[in-house]
Length: 165
Image 1 (cartoon, rainbow, N blue to C red):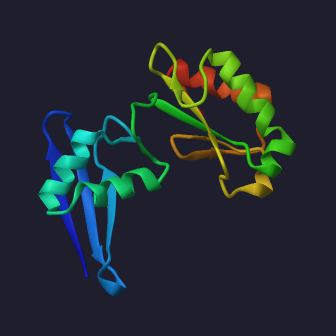
Image 2: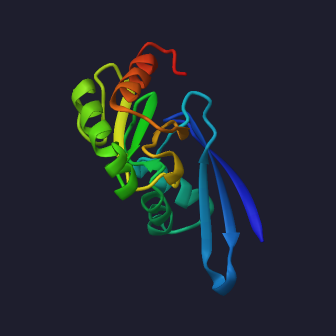
Image 3: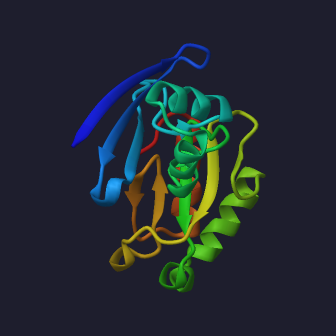
């Protein structure tokens, strides 16, 4: 049995859809989705976790477990364009490691950091599950396959100018 709860956290102006599913054995499955039109990324603060837990009558640890398990739920702000570079074995061998290092150098940031203009953040992704198209770069959860160092640099440059492909 699933129920849907809409929570508006007025301090952050983020609307969260919380789907609660009672699974076999009495466990509770919580799925939180961002419903804010300004961002495709979910940024979950400790305060947000407390609000969700209180509204759903759950322990903060239960909500925190969900927020920390799924990599798409970020614990700090990300860029307007969040770029993930697959650095798993196949992508790494096909150029993923070189792309990741080149993007960090090109943008002047490290893993999980945001450019000073707030436009781009970058992180290494363990696997994008698109090995046939390696190396893969993801931006706001959209795949860009068969990337090269130059095509990835062009991608982030276009994003910074507000013109992603």
